[in-house]
Image (cartoon, rainbow, N blue to C red; front, side):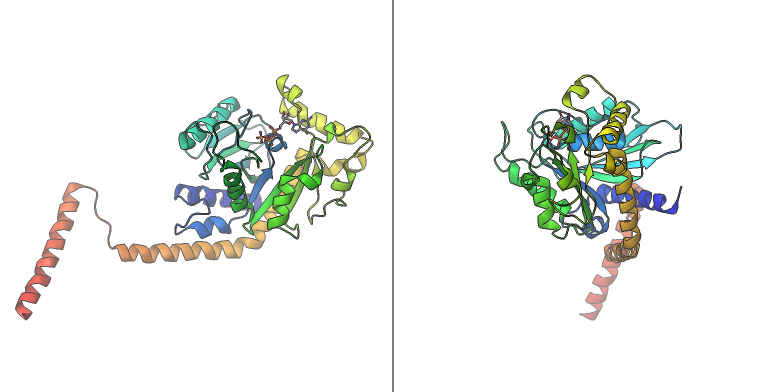
Length: 357
Ligand SMILES: Nc1nc2c(ncn2[C@@H]2O[C@H](COP(=O)(O)OP(=O)(O)OP(=O)(O)O)[C@@H](O)[C@H]2O)c(=O)[nH]1
């Protein structure tokens, strides 16, 4: 494993530790600054923009819950770990550390169940993330955070505030200066109306940390193309735009598997009269490699600040430990001993006062 790959792994481990300690950003606990210091890739898009499809395509597996309405109701921190060729794929949740999932339909079920455990079945949202690691020879090392889709109206059973709640949650991720924004927009809608680009433009006006992703290129009206967007003329970003062709609903209903879908996507770009000249820089596999490389360079640039943040947290914790005093034993004998010591100390001070008085 190269040094940079192991560095992405290291950042993954720090993120997991932060979550276990109750730090997932936005909070006011002692460590929140550490999570904030870590670079993340946040996936942002309006409902039905193709977010889940892009994530599944990057992973090469079906594993995300599907359905109508707001399906993603908690952030999903998805950590991809590349393993050696021929090794078996499996998934692991942080909240179920000893269970290896090799059946990805069970992963989907567990995401749903774990969401419901926190939010109830009320369709509420929660900012507490679910951590999922996928180990596979077919992925690149990458960490992505899937967020609820931006929406415009509350549907049955949801409080009116859900529209703002989702926007605030998504905003809290993308406004961090260390966050890399994966802004998903469907090509069959005017880019000027894209929720993802609207939000990205607000928090990253220079476009230096936004990657624009255009899905549904195959669904554009005949005679139209998305070259103005893909070539950066409609909306300029400092990072390149990437076009994607995911599985259609009909493909999903026919159980077209992801490997076939990736091949069809490659063929689409290679044979398209509009996009063939861009084919080597399009598609979900290219997007995954582009993001992994970018994440590596961001981590490399931030190593000094991450190291100093960790050292600062250690110093703060050590001084808090000093303040709290020595640890108290867990067994009854040790606890009794501690109480007797306290009594002796009290007795001594009391006597000194009596003598003095
Ligand atoms: N033809 C075609 N269909 C697509 C493409 N991308 C997504 N779809 C379809 O669009 C629908 C919505 O896609 P999802 O990936 O579920 O979108 P999402 O943004 O995750 O949606 P929500 O989680 O409901 O907000 C599904 O039926 C997909 O099959 C694409 O590139 N081409």
